[in-house]
Length: 351
Ligand code: SAM
Ligand code: SF4
Image: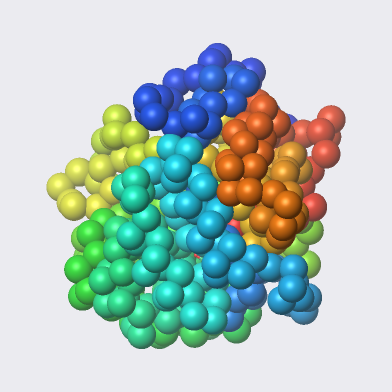
């Protein structure tokens, strides 16, 4: 069940395959069109998931993180350049003070087609209705176990019942295609794949299984020992369900399959065992205002320096973003000894 990282079959890119949108001004040197950003609104979180953070985290001082106004300006610059989809992430977006005021403004951004949120769900019982009213189109909710004790072990401090209530609240608020995200880890939850899928099917939710990525050092485990390949996850699912691969492109990293006879789809996010970099249409902005061109590489541009420099204009910000596209690397090289591995933890990256 553990992946063999060194025989992942990653290959050189055959060239861009993503159906390019016509309007974006953001095109990298491999011809990939960027029309999707993941905007991190905080590095903080009310959980401490073992694959994402260390137990005693030090978070960024306030002066180093973008203000809500600065985050809005970054989002506005990207949408003016052709970005049509923004996913809010973190850290846990819903712990950022006054985040709803930002979300309400983003929901009205001209040109934006999809405003999405990835959340641990713990506060959705409070915010689901307001998020929908603010224009959030869809939510992804992370849940790695349906057993309260295990959930607490994986999230270190999270409460399962809060997340389950959050999922119910998202459905009740009318969000369509609510998707669960589960990181499958050997020795933690690998025997819950079918339980998680059954739970999703019973509620007509989608679910994505995510391979644990080597982003920074995990403090409680060796990632090479815990990472489960999605080929293995799929084989477990196929002992009970028939899956039909979907041709649908979601402009994200998931490859979807329909669960035959049910409304749910299963997504497989397999950055460790399969390389889909040729289709990459996204970049990330950390809460420090660093434009990260690739999840698995350090290439970045400091947008905060431009925003906070009184002599620079909004147009300078846009020009810097356009120029940054040349830095987008061809691909990541997870677990490849010949390439440096990311030292950033996921909460600093923006998942
Ligand atoms: N706090 C929110 C949440 O948990 O959904 C949003 C941020 S979190 C960093 C985004 C996603 O990244 C979650 O689904 C989480 O499970 C996933 N994630 C975090 N660290 C990861 C890692 N090392 N490998 C794979 N997925 C990871
Ligand atoms: Fe928090 Fe999400 Fe990271 Fe878990 S995965 S520690 S909920 S940011």
